[in-house]
Amino acid sequence: MLGQTHRLAGIAAGIALAGELNIIPIERPFAFAGVIFVSAMGSLMPDADQPNSTIGRRFFLLWLPLYILRMIIRIIAFFAPSMKQVSRGLAHRGISHSPWFWGVFGALLWCVPWMRNEGVIYFYAFFAGIATHLLLDYLTGGIPLIPFSLKRNHPPIVFKTKGYFEFLTASVLGIWIGIMVLSYLGLRPAIRRILVMLIRYV
Image 1 (cartoon, rainbow, N blue to C red):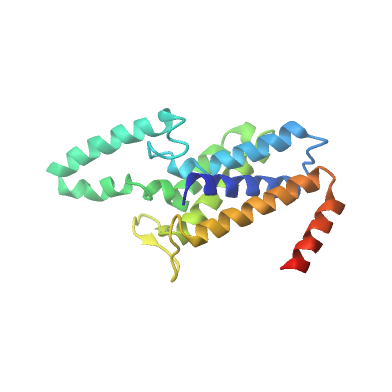
Image 2: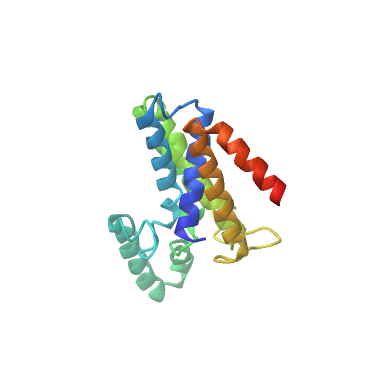
C-alpha cells in the first residue's frame, strides 16, 4: 500500500490506543500527540528498507546500512548460490515484513527498563503501528508468516495497491480520524447531527 494509507492506519491505531489507555488530549496533550506520532512512525517502519518509501526519503540512515548490506550479499550470492536465500530475505517484503522479526525486535526492546515503565505507552503505540502495516500488506500481496520462511502468505483474495480497496480503506480511515478528532474536541452533538443527516440522504 501507499505510504499515506499506512500513515492513516497508524494514526487511527494511535487514536484508538490513546482512547483505550484513557489518554485524554485536553488532560495529557503531549502524551496524546506522542502516542499518535509514534504509532504513525511505526506504521511506516517496515518500509524503511526502501530508499523511495515515505520514511526512506526522509531518514536515509534507516535504509542506507541495509542497502549496503543487501548489495554486499548480492555480490556474494553471485559467487555462492547458497546465499541467494539470504539475498531474497533482504529484499522488500522479506524479513522487514515478517511478524517474527518484529516480535524478536520487540522482545529485545522490552529489555530496556524505560520501555517497561515510562515508555510503555510508546512501546505499544510503535508496535500497533507496525501491526497495521503488516495487516494491510498481508491483504495486498502478502507477507512472510512462517518462521524462517520468506514465502509470502496472503488471503484467498488479494487486493491491489492503488486500487479501489486502498481508496476505500484510506477514505474510511480518514473519516474515522476526523470523527474522533471532533469527538475529542467536545463536538459529539454536532457529529451525531452530521451522521443522522448522512444516514437520511444515503
